[in-house]
Length: 203
Image 1 (cartoon, rainbow, N blue to C red):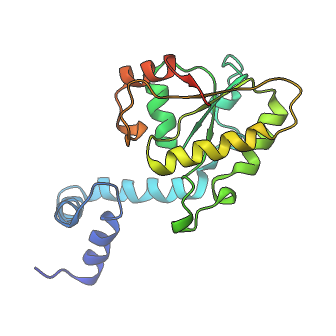
Image 2: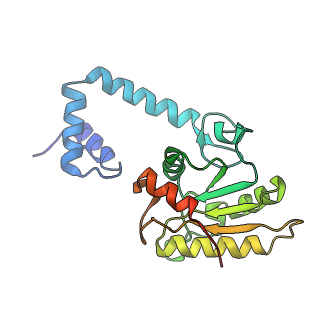
Image 3: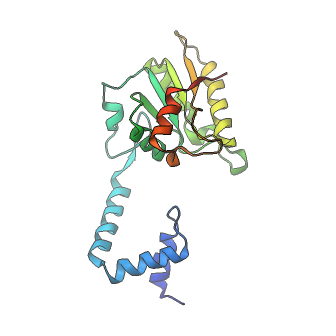
């Protein structure tokens, strides 16, 4: 079936969403235009506003409308423990588990030389400055347990060990309960809680 140019553009744009194939994108597009045009207009407005106003936290790089996100602003959280994750979805997954009360740093990816992703692309310099400035005592490496995630965790550990710190820093890695090759956003809250509670010193 052929669609008009504008409808085809909408279907193609919807396919950019995670887990949305062409058939699903077609159903979504037709439903939005045929059954819920008011909701479609609201959706378009919300997306436009979010693109304009949502950016990265100046400290942890998580998504926020403010310069500093609510997590970084919360002084009740443990300022000495920093959890490093790959994406904002990982922050949401860990927060949903409810067992971690420290701070975060979001990489927005992982090292992948074949894809041209280097340390500067995932904010390593900003991370090192954060550790130096805020007296972090423990860094939890919660990158995904994939080959690239493990390589990224190893690289970060090496960079942290080279810092001229006036106090020892503990490096730990989540492991227990999280399957090899697994991604945090798909792991249930109970398993994530166990993974943080059973984290191991990074060798």
